[in-house]
Image (cartoon, rainbow, N blue to C red; front, top):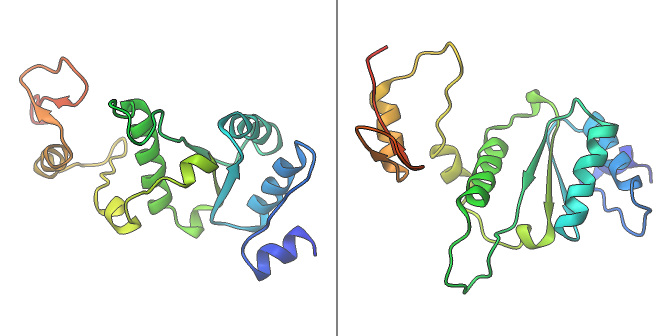
Length: 169
């Protein structure tokens, strides 16, 4: 069965025992024929990084996102870093907002990241706030969103997680 037939019939394509690089070509072929989210699950973070580099070569115009694993163990006394938490939630929010009309979107991750629990899609979609350059944003809803998501209002922003309101433009 060809890759095109597999995508049109089952919506999934499993590639195994293939030389490195062949999987990147298959993912690029899938991106050309499947206008939705394409999830590539690598065996480890190193292979996921190699896939990202290969996709830059084979499909430089197709948007790719990384979905990293936590950088700590489940019962460690430390929490995951804010950079990893931010990357995971940003990727989930972009996946939740993605529509088939937007074209293909490739998400690259590793098996240990996929095995970790995530909030439901509806929760992520409702907890997202989108603002584009040149668009009007309601300040009250923006401040409400920031407060509901753990940001602290401050007179002067000094640390991550704080916000300040300046002017009215």
